[in-house]
Each structure stands twice: as structure tokens, then as C-alpha cells.
Amino acid sequence: MNITKTIQETTTVLLKIELLPEELKPYLDKAVRRISKQVAVPGFRPGHAPYDMIKQQVGEMEIYQEAVEDVVQDTLPKAVKQEPIDFVGKPAVAIESLAPGNALVYTATFAIMPKVDLKKYQTVKVKKTVPAVDEKKFEQTMADLRKLRTKQEPVERAAQTGDSVTIDFDIKLAGVSIEGGQGKDVPVVLGDKYFIPGFEEALMGMKANETKQFQVTFPEDYSAKHLAGKTCDVTATVKQVQQVNLPELNDDFAKELNFKSAQELQDQIRANLVKELEQKADQDFETTVIEAVIKQADFEPIPSLMVEYELDRMMEELRQQVEDQGGKFADYLSHMKKTEPELRDGWKEHADKRIKGALVIKTVAEQEKIEITEDAITAEIARRKAYYKDAPDTQKQMDGFDYRAYVRTVLRNEQAVKKLKELAEK
Image 1 (spheres, one colour):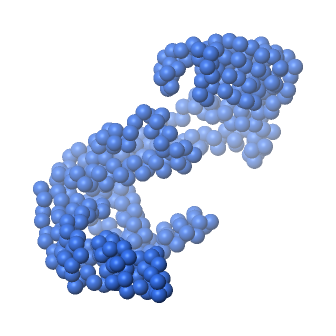
Image 2 (cartoon, rainbow, N blue to C red; image 1 turned 135 degrees about the vertical axis):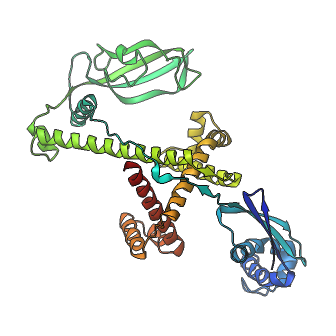
Image 3 (spheres, rainbow, N blue to C red; image 1 turned 60 degrees about the vertical axis):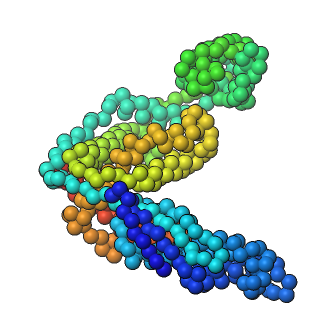
């Protein structure tokens, strides 16, 4: 195996790897066995047809193409070991020459890990502030909690503010029902203002089994641009009117939530809000500290490949977030009126900041000589396995060497961030 190493513009390294025909033979034999399991050859059991027979069936180029992935997966790590590279992300692999009877030549382009001069990062000082609980937020939280325990009672009277009405409705624009503008048995709490302006107001005074026609005008900034500012006709039928009875905030209410008294409940809610504020303040403090270190540090040029890797990661994070919330990524893009390339283009500055933050944390870990013990790694993996106790496949993925290396990096980064925060607070 011949290897040629080329440094390109200080940000990437290109390895050119050549395998002679005789070096390819074991990979071609393996590819033939794999193909012969899929291609029927008279007189031979699946997986046992000889090379020449498979060559006649599918062509020799097909065998070479089948072997390429095995070749790269096996030889690239050996090439990197022979020609050490401090790289980040996955290399970009390209096949330069592939033809039966000739050498296989491919290239792998690596993004070089940029060096960072943190200057005197130990001198960075940031003031950490934790705001007091907003009393309006506290009161709203208590009100929301009471709403969760409301009891509804059917009434014969006309609907009024605070009532819950169950309706069927149809919204039309120029005589045509709009997409998503119909509903059956939809509960509407009058006064909550979840519908477009004028909709809930029109339901006021209606009784069960009454039908009413009225008009509403969509706001100028409505998300569906074809409806923004348009006046539509609505037909609504009230099927039921219910009085919403909000429970009083007393000891009996608190006991329904497993608290001894209303005071204990309020104390706990306030403590939860304080904890949220402290967590948010800590996150803001961490971000500010890292940004301050980035500002005074000197970075080597960030490889474009590294930026692309980070954009890939950001795209996957967003996709996962949308899907975890039960949505479809294609629908999200449609709603945002963006394509993936447009999103990526708008994220480049943020991707650069994320990369520099990661480089700062990595460099601090190195300069502070932070090491993670095997016991700490084992304990963290055990904790994660306990969290995924009902997902054996996920647990199994945590048993490999690569996952231990990943957990080591996570814990090391956490310790580096902790050290930075400690230094900034002193």
C-alpha cells in the first residue's frame, strides 16, 4: 500500500492511497462471496460460486465496486496510523482510479484540528447574576395549575366569558372552505383568545344547538400568507355550553396534589421557579464565559470541512427535535418557507461560534491536564444504561470501545467547562 500525504492550505490534509492488484485480492474474494449469496449460479450453493462464474454473471467491474467499501474501511485507519493526522470529523473519500486488473487509488481529505492560543484565559472574569422570581410569573403559574384541575358543568344558559363551548365550524374564503379551517367537537374556552380575533367574541351569547354565521379577519402578520388580512365567512354550531369551575387555592386543593397545605404547595412552586432561574442563569453564565475566552483567543483558520460537519450536526439536531415533537421535517421546512441549503447558509456564523467554543473547551482540558478515570466512565455508562433500561438495543451500543471514548470526551469537556466557570467567578 502506497501512501502520499499532502497538506492543503494549512486547514486540510489529503492522503492518496494506492493498493496494487495483488493487495486487492482478499477484498475481491470477499466481495465475490457476498455477491454469490444474491446471484443464483447453477451448480453452486449460495455464497460458494467461484470468481470467474460471478464475473460472467455480473461483470468484473461490479465485483470491484462491491469491494471498494471494504477496502476503504480496512485500509484508511491503517494509513492514518502510518501517517498520523490530528483531524476532526469524517474524511471526505473519493475514488480516483478503479478498473479490473489495475491498482485501486483513492483519496481521503481530512480537516485538520485548528490550534488555539487561549492567551490568559485564567484572567477572564464574568459576573453571574440570578434574577428574583417575577411575582406575575408566580401568580400565572398558580393560575395555570388551578386550570388543570377545573371541573366543567353543562348549563342551559347562553355562553359567557370563561365558559367552555363545544363547536363544529367551517371557515370559507370567497365561498370555498379553507384548508384546516374546519373542526368537529372542538372545545373553545371563551376569553382564552386562542382563535383569531373576533372568533370567540362571536360565540358569546350562543346556546347549545344554535348555529351562527359571522365574519372574521385574519391578522396582517398571519403565518399563512394567503390568508393574512383576508376576511372570511364562518359558520359555527354550538353543541354544548359548560361552565368552567376553577378550584379555590386552599388546603383541600393542595391535598389533591399530595401537599399538606396551600402554603406548602406555593412554597414548592416558588422553589421550582427559583431552580429554573438558577439553571438559566448558570447556562447564560457558561455561554458568556466561553464567548469571553473566544473573544481574546487566537484561532488558526477553521477548515471548511469542519464547518460542513458542524452544519450537518446542527441539521440533524433540528430534525430530531422536530420529530421528537411529533412533527415531520418536510412540514417544518414548508412552514418556515426554507430549504435545507438556505437553513445551512444562515447557520454558518453560528456554526463557526460552536466550533470555536468546542476548541476552547478541548484546549482548556489539555492545558489543565484534565483526565477521566475508567471508574468514572464506567459509572456514567451505568447511569445511562439505567435510563434506557427498557431499550436493550440502545444499551448494547454502549458496550463498545468507541462509546467509552465518547463518554470520556463528554466527561472531560464537562470538567473543562466547570474549571472555566470556577476561574471566571474568582
